[in-house]
Structure formats: C-alpha cells, structure tokens
Length: 256
Image 1 (cartoon, rainbow, N blue to C red):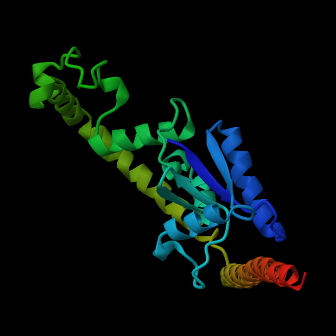
Image 2: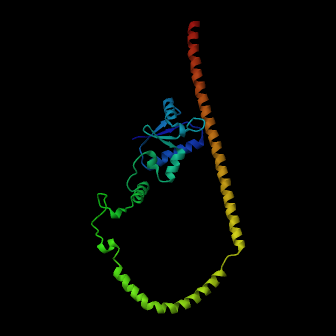
Image 3: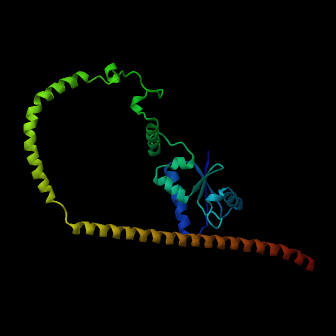
C-alpha cells in the first residue's frame, strides 16, 4: 500500500505551504512510506486528484485544495481530517495502515478491545482465550466463601451492641458541634455572584475566539480560491499563446 500526498510545489499561499510541510514532516517522523504528487506541474495529477476526491468531501466551489491524501486509490482525507487524526493519535487508522506494536495508537486499540470484550490481557493465555489455569474455590463460585466468617462477626456485633449504644450518644453531640462549625464556613452570596460573572466572561471570550477563528478560516478559503483562479488563468493564457504561435507559423511559411 502506497500513501499518495498531492501537493502544489509552486503554490503562492503560505497557508497551503505550511499545511503541506506539516503533513510531510509528520509522515517522515512516523517513517511512513509515501509518494509526493505535484499538481502544479502535472495536469494528470491535478485531474486525478479532483476526480477521486468524493463529492461530499469537496468544498463549496467544488475544487479541492492541496494537500489531499490517498492510500492507493482510497481517499483518506485533507489537511483538516489529518490534523484531527493526529490530535487523537489515530493517524495510522486515518491512513488505513496497521499501527506498529508499542505505538500510542496500538495501545489505545488494545484498551478498546479489552473494554469491548470485558476481559483483561492478564486474564488471557497466549492463544487469546481465557486462562482456566487459575482455579476459583467452589465456595467463592457459590457465594458461600464468607458464610462462616459472617456468622462469627454477627456474634461479635451482638456483644458489642450495648457499647455502641453508649458511644452513639457521644457521637451525636460531636456531630451537632461539627454541623455548627460547618454552617459558619459557608461562603457569602457575593462570592457566588463573582464566580458566575467570571464564568460568563470566560464564555464570552470563548465565543469571541470562535468567531475570530471562523473569520480567519473564511479569509483563508477566499485567498486559496483566488490563488487557484489565478493559476488557472495563467495556464489558460499559456495555452492560448501556444495556439496563437502555432497559427502564426503557417502564415509565415505561406508569405515566404
């Protein structure tokens, strides 16, 4: 399985360049084999990428921006989904690759398997089956393991009942004193109001940050769309110039 990363080598957008560098650097850090495919210098790569990105994964304008990641012919995702997988330690699952033993993703997968099946690793043998070598006493299986002990404890409790009755009165007095002390430690209403104001201010700041992030993302999208539009116009102009040159050559030959 070959991981394909579609990039734009001549992109003028610093945001796209940074995203491409992040993907490549992280794949190299994980020692994942991958192939870079340039869409700026190779029209076939560009067309293949656009045709194989699922429609539901394309942006509103229908033009997917690099970097786009594939596993052979299977689409993995764009930079945003790659970043989310990296944050959740699920890059190998994102790429459709088995996580190497000992990695964080492999450990998470083992823990999820244990929770799903309701068994622990130390309770299974080498074949993955429950280890039957640990014998459980019959009394414990039937719930009678502590029956004799419980009878002895009941007898002791009976003898100590009178002593506990005397101690109970002293404990009641101590409990009342403790309740009075606790009542004096209750915070005033002003502190609660201050805490509520702090929470409201924090929520307002979070909402403002989210709004700023949305605006920044919209500006970035507009910048990327404008860059692609300019790139396509340049390519169309080059094609038109070549066609005009091809038309001028026969005219010159006829004039001669």
